[in-house]
Length: 192
Image (cartoon, rainbow, N blue to C red):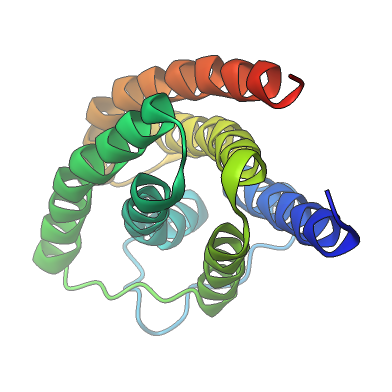
């Protein structure tokens, strides 16, 4: 591995870690800013955080999955990536339907930047390095996403969002188990 590739991987892992911290509320839980004007006062801080992150998380999974479908040398990872693309399209549609009924337009420019940086990292990687970056990122993403959805189920105030989280969480947990299996395989394959 050359120095540039190692630097990209370190940056990528740092960004993934930062996203996971944001997804689980670490670092932002202590300073809950008031909801911006785009979001009506019907949401508590948990709902507001959930909407902002879930609204970008599912499209990120579609975009990163498409990259992995095209770039991964591993059939297993391409298959997982296809599952991410196929299973997140209905999630995007379901969440958008809820937000449209409530006349909510979420906005989170910080997460947009983090997602763009993570996608850039995936575009820059190739071969086994790509597979490791993608699978490790998926493990961290799915862990953070599960925590985000559990937080909404336990502490959200909006019944529609809580039900959406309840229905979606089993899929996230399944995706996490699959990602853990892939990460183990990618680590073994790269040490040969």
